[in-house]
Length: 133
Length: 133
Length: 133
Length: 133
Image 1 (cartoon, one colour):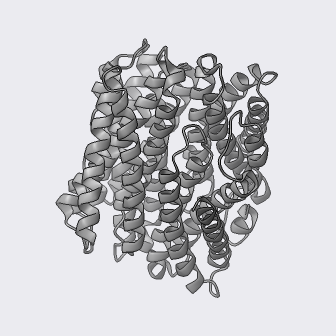
Image 2 (cartoon, one colour):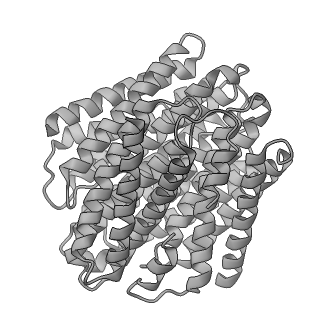
């Protein structure tokens, strides 16, 4: 990922710590990809009928992380209210998806890996939310 | 839009009022399209340098509405926490974008129309958020 | 949808017919929403295991239509190659999804309605593709 | 990125080479983030009026790469026509965006880095397209 390089070459001020920001964006992008892949892996499992909630939460989390990554990639005309509210929403999605995937982690490796991505992303978003105040 | 028809043929229960839900989804989809178009219209204005914040907020609002529309289009494995947090985030985006576009409404018709879409969407999301409680 | 109004207030030239463009964008937005909803409706069916391909194709088509709607909502710095290639990709997605949903149309009303949205969208995109040449 | 791990734990067959697939998905995700960031960096430049086409092409490329990354992250109910058409569309977007950013590469570091991401992504997508045949 070129996230750090892109942040370093942004031509104006950024109110937030660029290292933290890069780490959060990368976690979001990784979580979004993992959730898209996990939804599809669940869809191919024999026991797909038991994984409906997992698939749905994966899809929500993939969309939420993608949108939050984009919002955090923009610094022009920064509005803390927008950033804060989307971090909170994304934390809710990551927590729900991490919890759901964790329940299937022993049975499905893709759920175990995806739960990890959700936990990492939730922690990174929470750290940034606290930094914004 | 076939939103109402799709909601009526969903094969399981939906915890929320289907008419309200259809209205909110349609408002989100309309707002997302208007914001994408407004960002691009601003980008073509002679005074683009004065519309930077408007373009940025349009892009955020377009993404936020698109994600929220998708989340509200899913009912399987419903999780009120996810829905609530994304409605709140989307309300923040619509309010910021509506405020920003309203400032340029007398000068740019596309901003006037887009502000309208943002206000309608903010109101619809707020109504649904109150209904969820 | 405010698609027509947004197109009419775009401040520069648009190389394509605005009425056709509005019709295509609206068809794309409708198809994207229908496909998201159909994926979720399929996920709640008892026979979800028989609907795996339908869910997957719905998700692809929802993403493809959303991206194409955004590209067609931008007119600044128009590049016919980008527009053409994305219309072609979207036509492939709508055709595959329409075919897949049509196979379940007699059993599932949501698939019947979604197939309709896909066919309408495929036809609209094809018309625009021919107009671009 | 956990792309390789997610591909390795997918429970069914994948018709394509998993290493190549992981490389392409990662390139798409990186390019999408770089393009979102470059659009915003261009928007903050003093000479924003000269960067309109660059911003627009960045936004198209960001959307196209995001959609293609999702399609390639799904393997259930694989349809080569959908994959092929979206790779072709994405190649068109990456080429246009790489060309546009390359024109500003000496003046704007973010354009130079983004052009690199676009070239890498275009090459990766082309390699996969050739592998599919």
